[in-house]
Image (cartoon, rainbow, N blue to C red; front, side, top):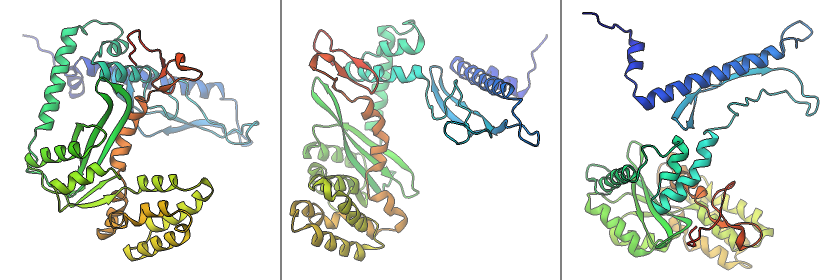
Length: 388
């Protein structure tokens, strides 16, 4: 009996699934296209030489690999680099090779960029993912109501498992908490997600909880924290959050021994909002003296200096710092290498900022009839039913 013998590389390729084959094919095609583009650029400038006869336009290896989001999925791309030593007569600087296929900072294909707002708008607000998925795959084949329904049931089951998982075997040293507000208005009002991110003793950050809330009320935060406690979560050493009163009231009720650290980014924003624009530069400098002090004692003296400089004319702005001094300086009581991470809620803000940006809904230019803008470059007219 005859048998097919393959080497290791061929065997691994045969084991790829359909999506894997599509991604691998897209990667190879893109790599060949980029190499051909560079070869054409070098060939067109082969006659450009310096005084010693050396070419002015040559290859310069490859840029670090990056992942590109495409319709076929995430594809790792390595872009060839060109060393162009010619001088641009208009700018006086070095000329740069610019790929028309893969621009320097692109991280996703235009097709994906166009579909993302549609996915957010339809998929998240109405539960109808078919219009967005049709843009990805080119047709509605395989995207019937029953197929999408099964996917939704699967996602709901995964979410239920996440919200009910056991936390008794995990110790979170620090936690960040924040309410992520979206401008999209759904049937139940403005969307708000209560998010908690924790860090383990080994420094690993992970998502602890995401729950629906109503304007970060005490009941919502306390309910979320009680749910975590019931599933075995122990009190973290420090909780980092903004000035939302609901969070701190709920924390004192559920985890009374956890220390509070107010977010400095939110605090600086609130202080500057209570000051005239003419003194913002001086106020920022004074606040940075507090934030970047070498220890707690120097930070307390910097707070006194801030109060002396601005307290007479703008006591409300100064009170925002002096009234919360203890919770603003909590991070100084822990190792210095942790200060950068404990001063702000950046682990949550940086993660959710792309989602919030793509679900931004504002009035269009002109009048109310111009429509509703739901991303920086796309416009969506209100539907006949008055939806957004």
